[in-house]
Length: 559
Image (cartoon, rainbow, N blue to C red; front, side, top):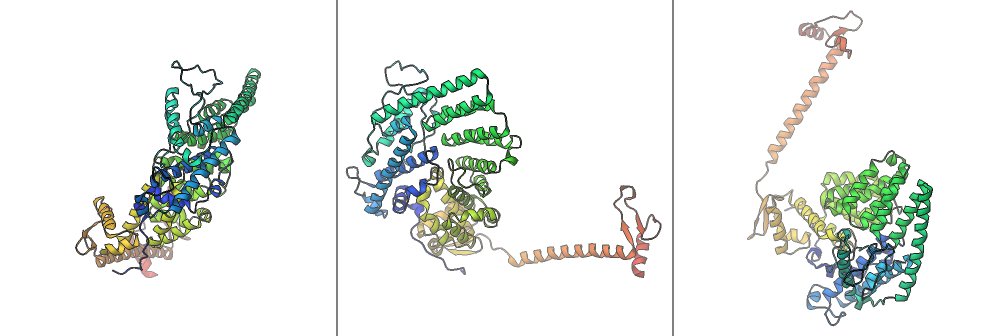
């Protein structure tokens, strides 16, 4: 078969375990540079640090011996992991937890600090008057939010939507704490009880001041003061990790909003909290409310960009990859770091590119990415993605897949993208295989395997799966190790049909043109007046009714 030369790559990362990919990526992953994209003391920065640290810790446990966490298992060695990879993974885990601890101490987030770094849960005092448990066990403060902490597999986040009852919150909080405390042997961060007691007193005093301001504003019936007080309460709760209480305060401020801009800011706050809480149904709802709020979209230039980014994240979690990709590619270029409490400009580029590659057709990719002047500027933030898209458009699938596989570990460390990485990569690989075999009647599977970095058995299974899903019309000849198309298309007949269609179109256009020219030469024109519809007249003469074909023919012959 005649085709441009293939570029063979190493064994595909699709067959490597997640822990091995993370270990290889940890050698070049710059944690400080990564988290610097996000706003300091923001919830998304904290969640990303904890997620990366927990993912690295889980990977260390899977790759190392139980009694010696600096010694690799036989399976890890067979997968190509080295001791240097394991040490880099350990350092990444420690750095992530240490940076998370610093963030918690800067924001005085005692509840989350206790949840992550205290071995034994202690009594938490409630400022809202909640009663003690009848069983005498410790009562978690109802205002304390159970935030997302990496699960034991390191590739999913716990949803806080199921923690509304106090009893459920206690059980889940303990489970999350045990999950993180499994990594104590890696980070060795001791709980500072003295600091927690001091900060709890400061937080109690600040809460009393905020309650006093709110009561004063309510007594004076000042709408703007009440709204400001609720917003201050919401920001206070958010900094302390009490996201549900922060959400309720922002929702209560809605009653006291007097302008579309204030309503829009309230919607953005609820959307941000909804993303942090993984409540994407609410995110979608408030995106729609913000889009339908007066003249908000036309007056606020950055509002559209923020709403599209939030809606794209919600669509991605709902596995609507095509819809999410279109939303990210259409985010205006004006949005840079103005929304880095939720998403960074690099994230918008990554999500828009990888989701579009997985779900959109070539024509849609051409329209939304290649020919889009707006998204082309965003691709400058990720040069490797720009190169990958160039290889894809040129059908250089070996180079394309090689670039993506090198960056797969970084995608595993992304808070929002990590749960979908494997599914996205399989979609992209299947699309490349379909487009690779489409022009040919016969394809050698060994050559195709070299192109995609797979051995013969792997490429045969992948192609058989696509044939079973009716995405490829063909059959595999295992003896000759080739893939043959089911039917041979008659290119000669197709060319004749196209030529006949073009000839018919040309003849019809030519007849219409000759008719118009003949009318002009005969001095006949058709007016657009409804009262004279169907009438014709010669220029400079009285209108003549019923001009027939004979007179028209005589006129033409005279000409």
